Image (cartoon, rainbow, N blue to C red; front, top):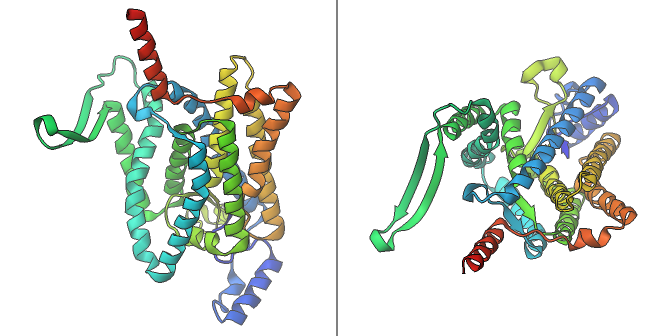
Length: 378
């Protein structure tokens, strides 16, 4: 979590220090004295809004993940993360992050961001359409004429024909795609922070909904690995902060600290990376599905981990505001999100059940049901 400006100051003393540093470096010496100083109200509004925006995709994504785990629709099938995937993920993420850092150092930042903007435009439109789809189903009445469509690309002829793309959608989905495209064009043309956040929220919600951990041990491996990853790349180097500031793509939620002074044209942002939402979010969603598997009315593990996330994110903001330095949010979120539910499980005497819980992928469930049906028929 960090501020997006190269020198984003929160008080006059920090502004003066920034001016001295810029003078010594010979850069922006004349402009250092007019750097924007965020007010207490503006800072509180920015951080409070970031916390709220982080909680929304986790809460609703977790709820939707429960239905997603039971879905037999191919387009809604979740991607299950195994322990092997979890162990490799920090290594892959590190290579990707350092590769982007080198790209920004070697090549023109403008052209890289242009290509990334087009790429994330397509992904963002699809993610926002998928996010809005359940809402559209509730808005339109049952009598609405909902026509079905299919986009099919194949390779070869007759017996050797293979499907490349088989996308089925209806009128409601088409309307969602149009709305997503309008937001996408707005983002491409203006790079406005609201359009960025709409795409970012959609990415985060889809990630929590569709990325499933198969058990709690896998979640601990993933969160533990990314805990080390986040701490190293933020405290050990300037790589993550440099990439976050250079990367013009909706991979972070931003909110201006100067909104009260400059309105929607504000430009001094605080930010929160989507990884700090999605990674703890998929673990919290797993705990909700564990609560559901217990077949009890309470959602103890979900709410305890959700409150732990709020505590961890609040602690991140407090530390960052106190020390005026970008903080690896997972440093505080991982111990909180893992520790709180484990303590609850110990108090309830359900620690063994918690770590033995194994989630069956929907396709495996479907295969089992078909085999059971065949046995009954025989």
